[in-house]
Image (tube, rainbow, N blue to C red; front, side):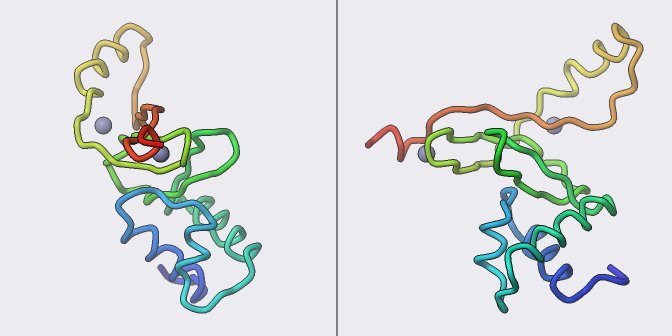
Length: 124
Ligand SMILES: [Zn+2]
Ligand SMILES: [Zn+2]
């Protein structure tokens, strides 16, 4: 946390306290003092560079940011409204050993997500 500007600390805190990954717009909306959006982007870039956060994109545009230390990287992504939910079941352990052997690979991490349509969107 040393050497972080106030804004970057605040961004990090928002990401840390959120159950689901957040996009830059959501982070911007939740910041107390509104900086400009580009300094939010710069802050996110910086934090990702430093390995404190990671990001993922589900639709090829919006990036969602989460803590690098977190292991709940299992998401349901609604392709209609963009809502994210976290789920707890992990399949990785079951296939990891087999993959490592088959591909002579050391697996370090994984992100797992399903794309679908949430219950709210299906009602419409
Ligand atoms: Zn939805
Ligand atoms: Zn997992």
